[in-house]
Structure formats: C-alpha cells, structure tokens
Length: 179
Image (cartoon, rainbow, N blue to C red; front, side):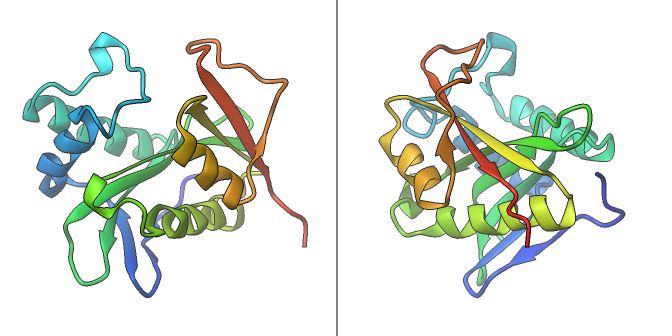
C-alpha cells in the first residue's frame, strides 16, 4: 500500500532515505561491482553497465514507488548522506499481502551489523506501515552471509518454494507475527 509521504527510517547509526539522482555513482557501483554482485543473476537488459544505466535504474525505482509496485531506500550512516547500500521491498503480490526483500552493501561496510539493522527497520516498516503479511527473500544457495543474515533476523527457509528464474536461489520467508 502506497503511502503519501516516503517513509524515512532512522536508527541511532543509520538513515534509510529515498534513492535520488545524487546516488548515481553509488548506485552504479552497487549494481556493477563484481564482488557485490557475485551471487546476483540479472538479465542482460537489467545489468548496470554505465552511469546512464544507473540513472535509468533510479528513475525506474522512483516510478515503481509512485505506481505502488516497490519501495527502495538508500542506506546511509547517520552522520553522512552518502549512500553505502540499498534495501528494498518489491515484487508486491496482486493482493498487496506479500513483498520481496532485496539488499546490497558496499564491501567497506560489510560485517558490521549494518545490513541487519537496516533489514529490521525495513521489515518493521513492511509489516507495520505497509501492512504486508509475508516478506520473502531470494538468495543464492552459496551466499552464506546473506543466508546467515536472513536466519539471524527470523526468516525461515521455505523448502517447498523454488525460484523459477534461478534454480541456484533459495527462498526464505518471514511471516508477520500477530500481537
């Protein structure tokens, strides 16, 4: 469900804000760096090969937010507005009860609990503010760090669900808990 105002998410050390044109260089890096994308399969037309591709991607996620199809945040340290990663809820189900989680983080900031903190804020927003009932995450079966992140944050491997587009992916689910 689309909100009237883009949800700015904050913790003591992170700010998750709307991705804009000022993030073009960081978006390009996060979507093109071989290490960051080691476990991500993208179609040829979805690959980011230039700054122009990064600008097009930012325009695309802005349009998808406006059309209530996804929401993407730039992850920033609280003392800086520079994007160090991205996290999104996208691929909404037609009934608006399910969304898919996606994320990436600059290697210099990995292993510091940043993505876990960002993930918790986004999951909370997805369940409490956007009213999703289920959040899914697809990750490559060999991506030990991503799988560990998901398990640490309460996601459960869904052994019955397969990714039709990438047989190397495993699907993890987090169901909204009733309070």
